[in-house]
Amino acid sequence: MTDEYDPASGPLGRFVRAFYDARRDAARSGELAPLEAFIAPDVRWAEPDVGDHMGDLRGRAAVLDMIRRALAATGDTFDLRVTGTVETGSHVAALIAWSAEKAGGRIEGRELAVYEVRDGRIAAAWFHPENIDDDRAFWGER
Image 1 (tube, rainbow, N blue to C red):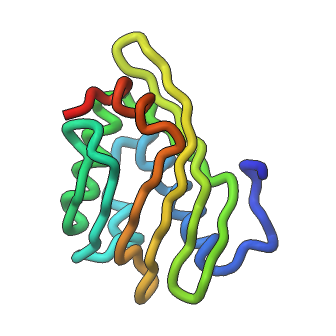
Image 2 (cartoon, rainbow, N blue to C red):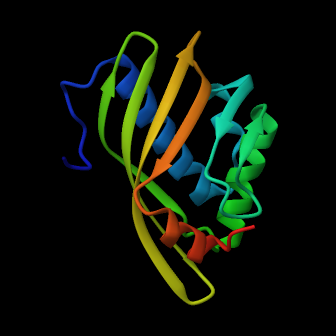
């Protein structure tokens, strides 16, 4: 799989890629408001509980705060890229390659992100890291 646009990707795959592109733009600009259009107000978001900013989140404000805190903890180096997607009528699974730097350390990893999309917004999300032990070491397990 590559980091490039996949023309075989369906509408939900394109939606998730657009969300990650918007997230990258938001990280560069420091303005997260454009991400609101992608996330339902009552979203359920389940990140692995490996750092102070992660865990089970409820609501758009909590998700945006988590993104803000992850960027702050990494000096805005936390980057995520979609490398492939598979979708159904209401869910899309995306393989995510990510990297970040913090306190002189660098980490690269992959995770499977599963999104439920309802009414054109992310209604729920679940994240499954490839190597949870590396994540815990980098983010500092609670």
